[in-house]
Structure formats: structure tokens, C-alpha cells
Image 1 (cartoon, rainbow, N blue to C red):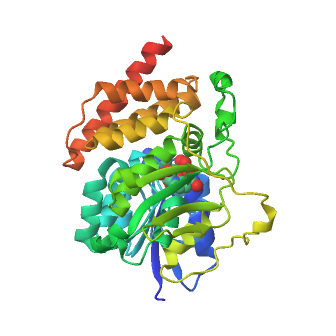
Image 2: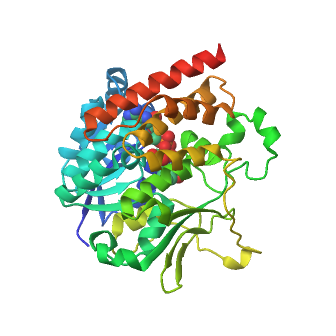
Length: 396
Ligand SMILES: NC(=O)c1ccc[n+]([C@@H]2O[C@H](COP(=O)([O-])OP(=O)(O)OC[C@H]3O[C@@H](n4cnc5c(N)ncnc54)[C@H](OP(=O)(O)O)[C@@H]3O)[C@@H](O)[C@H]2O)c1
């Protein structure tokens, strides 16, 4: 395999750190050329000292100043930059051929799209890029001529279970009856619904099987994460929404499945460790050591599967509603959810108000065609303002 030159967007986050862990194990295969972060300047500085990238990007001038100070006298070639445009520069000007898109939220959209247009191998963790701009993003990938490797464990699993070149050969689509996305059900799968009233951010972020960033942990608890993944799967694999199903599987051993028309169901299994899909994306079509322990199936008394309860998980129902509406509805859903989750984590919005905020905003902004990135970002801003306003109103 020829050397891969890697830009890690969001290198200080959960996915970013796991990506660098896989890369660290294979210095003969991967070279880091750009790293980006928002606030964790000290962590980014340590990563720069270890990997010596050509470019390091942070959010603002203060962060850039501090990073430059931390890197002074280290004899690095790293150029420190800041701001949203610099994230695109990290993709286009760093001589990378591979981009890990692992910025959380809508902020990751523009640089991920830049990677698609530039024909890079895109390792897509930032699901918001597909949720908000699925059509534009998939077209940009097609025009750019690069490779798209899904990193979300469920989509990576499905990618592994589908025939090679599935997305490029629509005639093979009729062979697939259903995609089954598995979901752990999060920490409140069995909590009496009456007790959900007093859930704290600490409880919501304590995921039973996966260690993840705070925002995605809350999304796992509400199952909004699975809803966003349904939309992501719709764009990635080009199958109708009716063929995408969600199954609760508390053990998180089966990462997802494909049911074929001949009766076969192909599943991908493994430890709940994101380094497996990350390593697969980095090295595809080869497989490399990811540092992940082996799966011992004898340790599980049973693997269980059940249908999700939409009453317990109203966010999942809202995501299906937005997916069916299409256009900018998923952007509105995603933006309202980001604001509601932030308010839950930092401003005391009650846990059960998250779906209430999302539903209110979804109902108040009509869906329009998601024809341009400018329009999508306008709608995103509008939905965020509407969510803020509604939260102030109900908190008031
Ligand atoms: N964690 C998982 O297991 C997992 C699994 C599947 C998919 N994903 C997806 O992968 C993405 C990353 O998730 P994560 O859990 O790694 O998130 P995370 O731990 O919160 O890390 C997010 C990264 O993005 C950076 N960032 C945050 N806001 C930014 C902004 N406005 N501009 C530029 N950079 C910004 C952060 O920088 P600072 O650290 O400096 O703030 C950090 O490097 C998400 O879209 C998530 O849905 C995650």
C-alpha cells in the first residue's frame, strides 16, 4: 500500500484521538499532514509535537497565539492557522490524500465538502455532512472522484456487508431487502419513563458500551443519533427509506446487518471500539492491526434484538419524519437538536424538553429544496435562532 497522507479534522476529539492511535501504530503506512481543533489547544500542541504536521488549525486568534507559543522552540515545520476558512485550507493545501472528517456538528460540513470536491479519500465520521447536505455531498464525491469510507460503526459495518462497488452499481440494489442499523438503546433503555424527567447530563453521557464525545452521547441516549444515522444511511447507500430499519441490540456486538433477497443476513461484529472502523477506512481494501482486542463471543450469554419504542424515543420518530419530508427538514432537525442538547448540557434544559424543542422548530420551519450550501447554512442559522428563542420562552 502506498503511503497515505492524512488530514485529521477534529483531531482532539474522541474520533480524532482514536484515529491518531491507529496511525501511530503504522508509521510506515500513514503520515499526518494537518491537524485541527477548536478549544483543546494543549492537546493539539502535544499532537503537533508528536506528528509534526504541515498545518495546525484552531478556531480563533487567541488559540492560534497560544498554540504558536506552545510549539515555539520545538523545531517543527507546523504552520499555525485559525478560522473556518483555514479548515478548508487544511484539506486543500496540506498535500493530503486522505481526510478524516471528525469535527462534531454543522461546523464540519464545509471542510468535509471541500474534501469531497477535491477528490480525497474521505473517512466520514461527521454524519451532519450527509444529514444536512446529503445530495450535494454525494454529488461532490462523484464529481471529485475520490473514495467515501463511512466511519460511523453502523455504516462501516453495512459497507463491509454489502458487495464491493454496491453504491456504483444500482442493478445490485434489488438484491438487498433491508439494512438493519443496530442501536444499543443507550443508558435509559429500561429506565421507567417517569424517571426520565430528572436525568442529568452526567447520566446521559454515561453510555453503557461506547466512550464518545458529550454531544453524541446525549444523542445516543435520546436515540437522535440513530435517527441521524438513518438519514446518513439513506444518502450513503442509495436505498429507499422504507428499506432502512433500526433494531435495539443492547450488547453492541453486531454493528449492523444487511438482509438479502435470498434469505441471507450478513452481519459485521466486533468490539465496540471505533478504532476498527477507523482502521478499515484508513487501510481499505486491506486490513491492518487497529489495537482492538479480539471479540470473545463465549463471554455473551445472549445477543438480543428488539424493535425501538418510539414513545420512549420521540427523537427517533422525529428523525424519520424529517427524513420523509426531505429537503432542508433534516438540517432543521439537526440544528434544533444541537441547540437543545447544548442547552441540556450547559444551561439546565430538562432532558425531556430536547424532543419538544426539536419538534417545535421542525413544525415551524417549512422544508425547502436543499439546493445549495448557502441555502442549507441559512436554514441552519434560522433553525438555531428558532430553537434558542423557544428555549428562552419555555425556560422563562
Ligand atoms: N465518538 C464516536 O464514537 C463517534 C462514532 C461515530 C460517529 N461519530 C461522529 O464523529 C464526529 C466527531 O465526534 P466525536 O465524538 O469525536 O466528537 P468530540 O469528541 O466532541 O470531538 C469533536 C472535534 O471537533 C472539534 N470541534 C468542535 N467544534 C468545532 C468547531 N466549531 N470548529 C472546528 N472544530 C470543532 C473539537 O475540537 P476541541 O476538542 O478542541 O473542542 C474536536 O476536535 C461527530 O459528527 C459524531 O457524530 C462519533
